[in-house]
Length: 160
Image (cartoon, rainbow, N blue to C red; front, side, top):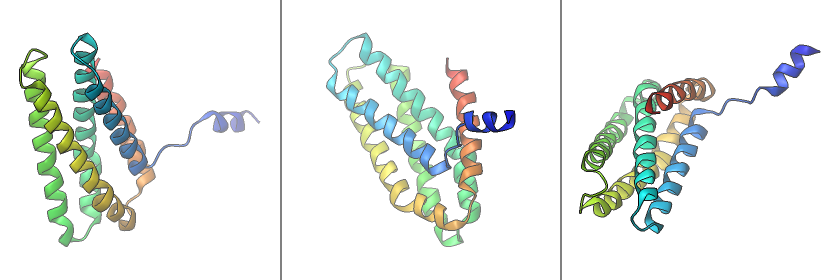
């Protein structure tokens, strides 16, 4: 009887695509909050949250999700995965530039707008191309979800 209680209290792990989609939704909501705010400390906090979320998300995709999907997909899909990696590089570069410049950068608003556009474009491609192919590939999305969540938890702890 005790074993059943333990099983019921455990939450079912998310599959990889659901976890990554939840990250996408979170960042999109943060961008919307940012666009509504005027200057102030709250805006700086929001910028940091966005940069942290994007950094951690990119890292778990690059370390775990992309390699697993790349291995499971046909060779004809290599270019799609290469493009996703290049998009990540552009996003990470802009995140780094935003973090180094700080809140007093006169180009901050423009950089955040471009970052949002890059991210939304990338998310759209993942949802329409990579995720459907990952689902069809036979890769174990439940197992990947567990790995992604464990690594995400580690990386978020390092950010604090």
